[in-house]
Image (tube, rainbow, N blue to C red; front, top):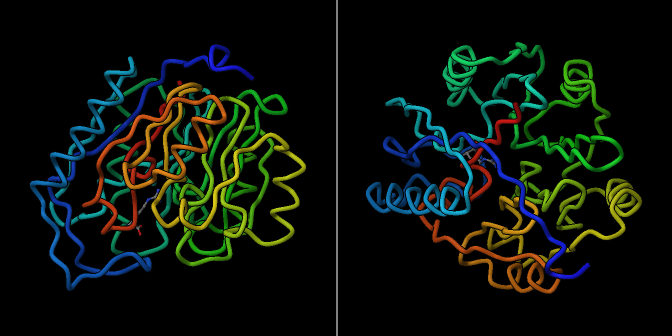
Length: 275
Ligand code: ARG
């Protein structure tokens, strides 16, 4: 595919500014509560991410951050929406559990069909949607956060086939740290983050996928937001940017070093609103 054929599609996103962001507990291997976070820098970097998305023509809604919920900046985890139906989140760790209600309240204020979950799931952290693959396909991760039972529940609620993928490396604890949608039908992923059987599944479903290596994953290069042409990813992920450019995508680097201290980057901070 040539560069010209990569067409962007305008998106709507939900983000939450890191005004109360800290690392005061450790629920993933990247978090170290003994190292201080620079709150002002985190906010400045987040604003640059938001501006990068709006400069590309996308709409960004914001959720007010709550004191005492330092991970609320990772808005991807709050829900998963497909064609106006919203499958709510239910967090694995008690430290983040109250965030779900603030996301629910956001959707209650709009024309959304919000569904309360029965099973533990962390929203777009572990679910990805590819509207142009196989008539509309959901990819779902399990192994660290989201329960496999939530994959079946998401399929019942959203009415799209859900393919379960087994995450096996604790550093890549959410699907969105190991795999991302680049456009409506293609993905980039880091194979070693998945079980051999799940790697086989991904090879079968996505023969044209962009493949990442360990250095790309360690730089949080998979934690990206793509619109079909542009790929917003963190500046550290230079190798990933090169692979994406070679595949005809246009990398848009943003500096997000402070958020990485919480174990997240671009995609973790952005939930797509699919009305
Ligand atoms: N500190 C947060 C947690 O461990 C980071 C969440 C990252 N979000 C994501 N979508 N991967 O829950």
